[in-house]
Every structure is written in structure tokens, then in C-alpha cells.
Image (cartoon, rainbow, N blue to C red; front, side, top):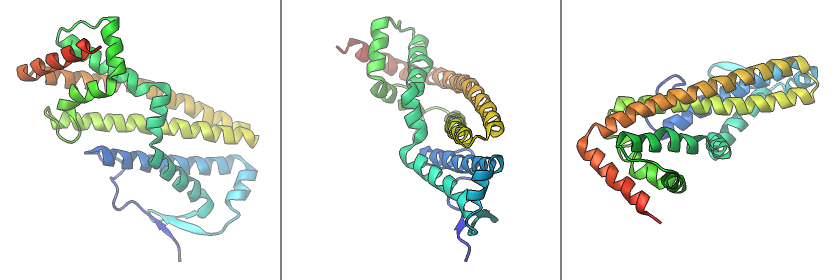
Length: 243
């Protein structure tokens, strides 16, 4: 009997996620597909890898396609592992991606829209208390679960961030594939993988600004309401006064 791997209970790959869990599922699906494609690429770039990957005749069925077990195994293991540890979060923490975005594309602009000056001391306090500041200001009105602003705008942000993290995890997997190809002395394949990695990094860098523009739109809608704006001023004053 042929084992079957499917995604009947997961978000369709090109659907817009409507929550955090669906976002993680979509990232996991694309991590699986990217790893599967790169495993095939490594196998066709190196005779040694090809021989190993074809050494087991067992196949698994993936969305009606029968795939050799040793091609599918790395994709299943990688997708499962990255989903459990939330690789994109780990990489974001390592490179300070989300931290910089929260400070310089959300909290500081949010203060600016409220005409609250941000001097170096206040910026340091925002950085130190970033998590709590985000929860009590921006996410108090633009959370995934209960947005107080346009849901369409919040879901658009979820979608953009999902693709952003897919690019990040894809770049990480490409880097690993490149290392594997170099170790197998498949230099032609390694060069091609390196070129793809550069392209992925460029797309990733460009996508950062797209996320920023959506954050700008959310901030504009948040502060358009006088009651919300006053509540935010009170919260930022509290953060600024904290010693």
C-alpha cells in the first residue's frame, strides 16, 4: 500500500490566511514544497545524491503524485521541524528583523502620527519594552483575532507577512542546499542555487518595504479615531515616564 501525504485540513497554498495558525500552516506547506523541489534539484545535480535518493524503491503519494520516499522524507522532516520551532521566528530573532520593524516602522511612526517626539532615551525605552508596547498600542487595534480597524487591511498584512516569512525560510533552505551541493562537488548546481539565494534575498529585502507600507496604512486608520489617538497618547506617556 502506498502511503499518502496530503493537506486536506490545511489552508490552500494561495489562500489568504485569516489567522496566525493558518499563516503557520501556509508557511509550512511552502517550506515542504521548496524542500521537495530542492531535494529533486540536488539529486539531479549530483550522481552521488541521485544514487542515494533512488536507492529505496518505496514511494509516497503527495497530492496524487507518487514520489520516491527518500525525496519526500527531507521535505516532511524539514517542514515538520521548522513548523515546531517556528524557524522564521528564530531567524527573525537572530537578525533582529521583527525588532527593527516594530520600532522603526510601527512604534516610532505611530508616535510621529500622534505628534509625540521620540528622543534617544524614549527610543531606548521602546526597544526595551517593545513586546508590551506593541501589545498595548498597535496590536490593541490591529490584532489578528479582534481588529478594531478594517479587517481587510489586517488580513492583507497577514498575507504579506506570510509571504515574507516564506521567503526567509526558503532562503535558509536554499543556503543549506547550496552547502550540500558544494560538499558533493556539484559546483554547477551550487552556482545556480547561489544565484537563486541572491534573488530570494533581494525579494526578501524588497518585501520589507511592502510590509512597511501596510503598517503605515494601519497606523493612519488607528489614529484617525480621536478616542483611540487619546488612549495611545496616554499609553506612550506611561511608557516614556517608566524608569
